Length: 275
Image (cartoon, rainbow, N blue to C red):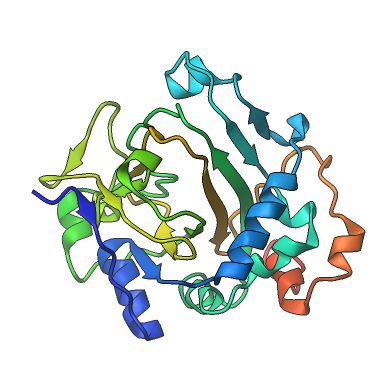
């Protein structure tokens, strides 16, 4: 049985939206080129963790409780990248990606999170999970082709390595966003399918729905794995920019370099309901 997925690319917006509805994710081969990959790696490495922003920038912390491992490993997970370095602004409305986002989430969609994630050798498997399950329905309703559930949140992944099994590829169960629920603890399959590795190359990207069942897998290699994640949502979904209770502040120097659309993606909306 094949234990990996070679993702299929689609050229038109209509096909990409159909893939999101059918599979729960869509693939963009070689979205970013070699020079930009090298620049992005460098800018990710330069970021420094801020504990108040829930950043993780350590080789030892959070091993047992969060990851189920006592072995030290590099885990550099940095929030709010767009607010740390203007280089990251482009990933708020990246070409091709923004078209899918606006078609799914509306022309007034916005980014709710952007994280840089570098994971080193020794990082163990994650549990199979869904990032968010906004509704629960019996599976037979979710499988009914007449039922079209709104897509509230999706995440843009930029991969900066040629993935192979030992490096810890993302594993997904295609179509599992239609399960109508999150996976239970310890559950490893849905509808007869187990999670399979998504084999991508450096510079490839995906967008996946928040409800799809997926997990990060163990890094058993001798190299670090680089991933940039940007989550986009319908405007009514709250932005996740820690620290909270009004302690987060936009960097005015970076805002001055943002385009009007990038500012909207950061929350500079026209007045609407509940404003």
